[in-house]
Picture 1 (cartoon, rainbow, N blue to C red):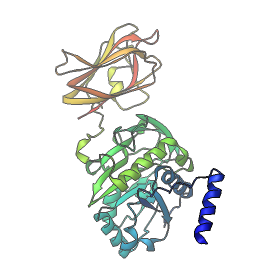
Picture 2 (cartoon, helix red, strand yellow; picture 1 turned 180 degrees about the vertical axis):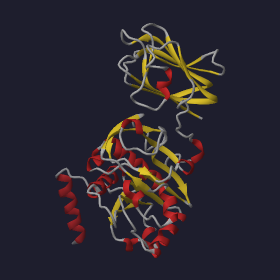
Picture 3 (spheres, one colour; picture 1 turned 30 degrees about the vertical axis):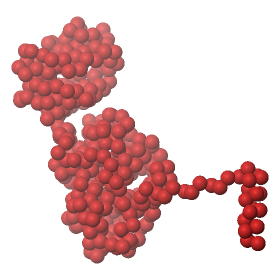
Picture 4 (cartoon, rainbow, N blue to C red; picture 1 turned 135 degrees about the vertical axis):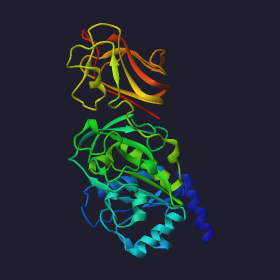
Length: 384
């Protein structure tokens, strides 16, 4: 009788043109979102958790969420490939729970810290190494430029080299660069309240004590979690923490120090005594070098030693170069063009991916964009 019912059911399904639903694919891995707070509580935690759930649904990984520190046991943590500390604050684990999490990471587990994860567990030195740097202060929420330091990592691939967005920008107690692989930095010249200077990392990753660590200082606002770029950054961070996807080797990345800052600089001409060439390398966004109103014109900086140059950033005043060359030289006499720019329209020209070497770097302008000369607020050189 049971066989007959099954057979009849099959006939009905066939007659209606129905097909059995395919089996749901097993998730590739499971992550735990941990968002306990013992200090300030961010109103973005709920939307952040949901954004991570959405990423899991779209990318075939499972997501669980908790604010219960009692879940930090060896048996429970073993179920997860990574634990995401989403804007945690203060002391959130007791000594036994801390030991369980240390052992979890040492066994190959992953950690992803978001924003206030750096404002957490100040008295737990092991955690300080894991997160990379502790929070120090922040100015008011405002728009700033995030600069991608490594465009090959899955977390930052596809992001703009100069990424303008609004968030709460953390200053850190220490610069973690020597211990981590920096993925993004903050350009302090584009906002008010930065205290770390020319090298201000704000997203990084590294292997740590047998496991993996990824941290981003972004993610304070609810709006962050609706941004495609920020969600892409989170997804790349999750995949690194859970699966080790992406190169986070500390030794592969040079520091982002402005090699031209306050170095000797000369120019083909100056418009007047108030616009000397030195104004372009003084880190001020209000002083400028301006040339005579003719072509060609140039400005060059002496780096003091031979460097490999990989990026030159220019910020133009209203008078700008429409066509110019970036050149390097070992002696200030023989020049090699490492980048030719045509059709420039002023503003900021962030020339990345340069391959050059020399003690001197020169901007050689051949076509002015206006009836005036060439006028630069900022002339920065980066490399090793």
